[in-house]
Length: 247
Image (cartoon, rainbow, N blue to C red; front, top):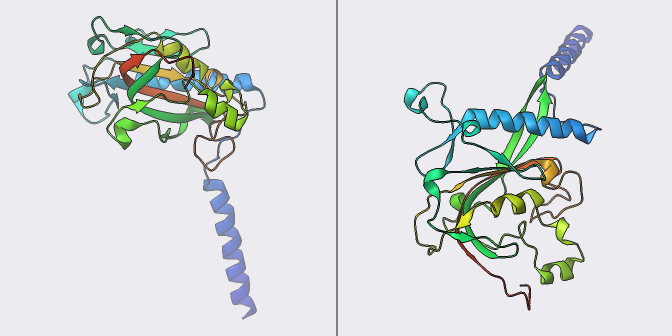
């Protein structure tokens, strides 16, 4: 009986040791925020090299097994531009309104989009996006099929801030605000089929970085700390806000 016990104990210790060796190291926040910024930049560049826009403007990854996308142009070759805060925007030439409506600083917008949140990290020397998820509630292209009105990360209403006691920066994403104004809006109904205008990539330094921010309906206090956001979008309509109420 003693021998059996020893064999079982030895086996469990060996299994435990093997398990630790095989475990993938989870994300560890760098102490220096500049290191995270570098992670973001490197992961974003790889993302732009590994993805293209299809005929409807959707972001698609290049296939390693199918040659059908071999002649597609990678995002990094579609003239990406950078805003002062560090956000990147790509305007798709075949997806723009003509002449279109200039988007004002506080306009009420209806946007069809796919919004995703990514975390960049270093795994065994390989820097890339190690997690991705829907920016839930802000991805109507996947979730509802209808444009979303007035996203709070673009404009936080006075009433919202009054209830929470939080400033605009608690909700609003500086990089997105800068980049969306580089596009022009269509003037079409929600029933119209989408034709996406392009891409906005907001690295964490131009989003929420490590600042306190809204949970946006999640169960976590700071769900988007160090998070990069990628938006694939079309502005269906943009109209001036009634600033007498600011809502």
